[in-house]
Image (cartoon, rainbow, N blue to C red):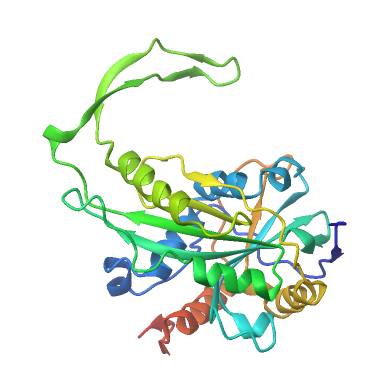
Length: 298
């Protein structure tokens, strides 16, 4: 497909270090609600980037210092594609950009499912794999479509930890590390990732659908497993235009995620923009069907 782009007239707020990305009800977070776990994944920029690299490697590798993605979450499908009833929501909508243009021909729509596993029940899988919703997005005409399984779990007992090799970086610029040493670590996330993605591979009904398994919400960065999405031959220009129109009207609710830090950035922390807090609070009220009272979720 020839690259299809349109001018990006507006951008979301560029959040400084320390700014909250999402608000959510504590009760929902404790239950590992699908939206809360998805927000946790989107908030971990390195993990998000590793997933995106696996789903659209060519798009990722082509990005420059002036490129990145705009990320939307839990968007009513009919607000993007008129009359689209199944799936009812687009869980994650990723729109790449370069300089001041949105790259609409590389738009990626993702269906998310949550695996709530435990050490005692490591074979747990979601009630639905998400492939039926993904096929609906393909039929609607989105350029790229994927299914993601996000995993949450408890920890392993100490006697189930495994012996692994570890090295420590001495000088990142020179690439020097300490000699490999042996340590004990809880490797349950790795086992869950392998099980989850093995099931995705076995059950995927269409090679156009990308898929991944990721483990967000942990102090460690566990590398995800994934298979890239391929271009949908039914990709529709009208769907891309619908994505563009939705972004233009709702850009404030997207996360601006650069591929690289800004050139010359000092990494200094800044204050939390009041405008962002108001906008995100409004979005959380819509996502969780809550009311806002006194600037807080009720």
